[in-house]
Length: 455
Image (cartoon, rainbow, N blue to C red; front, side, top):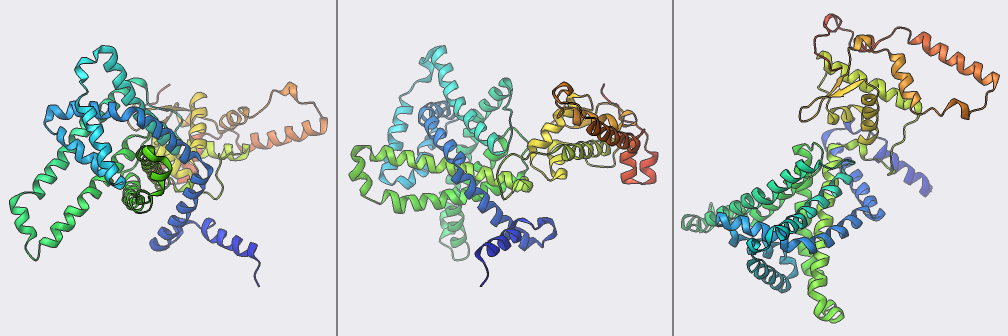
């Protein structure tokens, strides 16, 4: 009988020690789903996703009415403000009759709220409360995407304002147009016909799901302070939309349908149910963000979670790899060196790549362009970049001051021998030599250093 430990080890090897790129598409997809399922389960049990979801519930309770008030004021100018109530009813549908009651009270409160009489201070606080919700969502997404910096204040204000003004108009206009088309007399007559009727009814049923998926996809692509590919955002949006619809059905069937909560919480049962549904909604949104991240960065699908710490040898290797790829892009023999491209080439999570790029930029080896997305370029001609200097810079960031280490003649002689071997290997070798020895093509050898470099 095979040992349980061996079975577990064999399964682990089959899932985690296989290169996804070497598998057929079907096997690659199945293995990716298994890895994502495990990693998401680990992320949830460790508590970070649940903690962020609970924090967003608290912020939502403070920001919901101001958010709807701002949206209502904008939508009223376009004549589509009456669509707020149907949207709330759809969102709160899993709460049953309680959702109808909550949406009615919220809409009445918003309609009686006069933004124009709040004054400058009141209006400023109203906008700040609304922007704080978007900012908290951005921070949660940045954590998922391992992005340490948030947007600058001016950029944050302009982009948040565009989301809060233009976004609701487009969403409610699309919903209103769809409802008008579906209720048109011609469409109603077509639904009675045999060929088109079932298809139109299916389209009407799937339309809310399509809007939910589109909204999730937009949030995943726009909110994180990094470049998110459309495929990754769409993958997260489709899965999150499916989970949200399925979660709403399960919540309505098993939680709201039970009479125990009303017996326990009495008059607070509606509020408790509302907060639980908010929590589940935010948790599903964050799960979708994680799926989008793992779709774009499969190198982060690792068996053990935690920051990736590279030793000195791997740090040197990473620095040489990054400078080689960036130099290839500089000579036109490789792709342009954006952060996303470099992370994909390195096949490791983004933080160590970002940290190394920052160190190389700090020591004058790299500069960043003003384009969007940013490009990493050599700060000086690769002809003048000695590999020995590059290695010494990487090592110096890890070295302790010499006076803290005691001297030992035998150790000192060994270190000197190692340094002399390195000097001999790298004697006079430049970054350009490294790049052209790797490509080893006549066109690469003849390529002039034609691009203008920043100093």
